[in-house]
Length: 313
Ligand code: RIB
Ligand code: CA
Image (cartoon, rainbow, N blue to C red; front, side):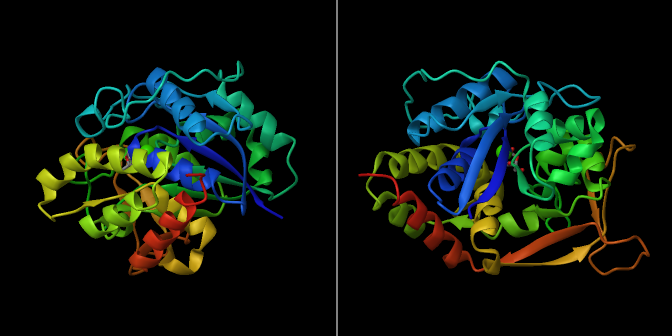
């Protein structure tokens, strides 16, 4: 039986790659996509999700627009990385399929209330606002969620939007706190992991060699979004973040981490959004998440190339 998943996202080029990967994987039953304000404002993340759905040829997957800003803070965006559209790089035709007229949070609540206990995996690729709002609105929906798998946080790798915090958590630290204290099993793919997933020239070549519209768009998207990180880190290749979430669902054996306690800084402006990860278990705080740290990187890219190859040429 395919694993039922919901993708909550702020596309974003790396989100787009994750969504293409998920929609090409028969092991996953994508119940729907919910968008959130993040990399760019909500109207653009929602337009981008529509673009990617049509690039994937998946009219069957509903998209609902969720929260436009964090629970209690103004939205912080990342056009400096993703471009003004949030999906700069390729040219996308205007999407024709509409979004659902239900608010994304209400769609989340209704879908989870109708789901069997522990039957849905929620994949969060941006700020955690929508799920947090759903849990506040209807706490019982937690029972339908078997786990949350999210790209977010950083510990040994420190932050990317501030010295202390990774972008997704930084944008809505209160939402991350709600999710991490909900009792729902959480797996985090932090920068400690994703900064090892580097899209080298050789890996770009393998993606391009797939030779279909989807792989071509992936190369063009990542060639745009990599510019910021190439200049910032000087590593010669840029990391890719969000597809780690989908890859972990498909092949968890590619990844290793630790069940530890992670708390979110919400009070200090200096360290707002820091994921205080008790990796060495120096506190008595109960473990509340699987904090991923290492991966079989070639195995990850083999999986990505394989799934992109599932689209027709
Ligand atoms: O810090 C990286 C994360 O922030 C990724 O999810 C990227 O898409 C942005 O949302
Ligand atoms: Ca994202």
